[in-house]
Amino acid sequence: MKRLFDLLLSSLGLLLLQPLFVVTAIMIKVDSTGPIFFRQERIGKNFRRFMIYKFRTMVVNAEEKGLRITSGGDQRVTKVGRILRKFKIDELPQLFNVLKGEMSLVGPRPEVEEYVTLYEEDYREILKRRPGITDVSSIIFREEEAVLKNQVDPEGYYKKILLPEKIRLAKEYIEKSSFLYDLKLVLNTLHRIICPRDVSRDGYRQKIIRDSSKEN
Image 1 (cartoon, rainbow, N blue to C red):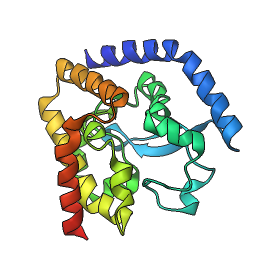
Image 2: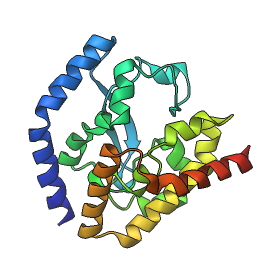
Image 3: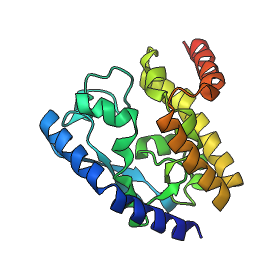
Image 4: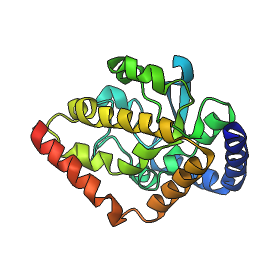
C-alpha cells in the first residue's frame, strides 16, 4: 500500500509540477554558474548508498568552502536558493528518488554517511525502511537553519542536539507508521510550507532555544 501510494503521488507530482521545474531551472541558471541539480550520496534502506537529488541552492563546490550543514545567512546560498529553500522547492526533485524506489514520500530523512556512523546502532532500526522526503522532524525542524545560525559551533550542535532528537522522532514515526499517518504528515508538511509562521511550532522552538543555552 505504501509503495503504491508513493508511486501514484510521485508520478502525479512530477507530471503536474513540470511548469514549476522549468521555471526553477531557468531561475537557477540565470542566477548563478553551475548545474541545475545538486546530487549527494546518502545512506538509504539497509544501508545502501544512493544519490539524492535537489535543485541546486548553493554555489558550486559549497562543501569545500564551509561546513557540511547550512545555517541561516550562509553566504554560500544563492539568491534564488534562498527562495527555493524557504518554500522547500529544492526538495521536489526527490520525487525522482521516490519513483526509483530509493525513497518514500514519508519516512525518516536520509543522512550522509558521516552522521549515520555516529549513531549506527540507532540507524540499524531506522534504515530497515526507505528514507522519506518529509517526516515529523522535517515539520518540527523547519526553522533548523535559523536555530543553527545562533550556535557557536553549528555542526557540533547539530550532531549532539538536533540529530539525536531527529533519531528519536524517526523511531517514534516507525512505531506509529500507517497509511493515514503518512497522509496526515504529507498534508501537515504542505500546510507548514504555505503557512510558515504557524504558532503551533512555538513551543518546540522555545525548547530548542533552551537546549541551545544549556549547550553553550
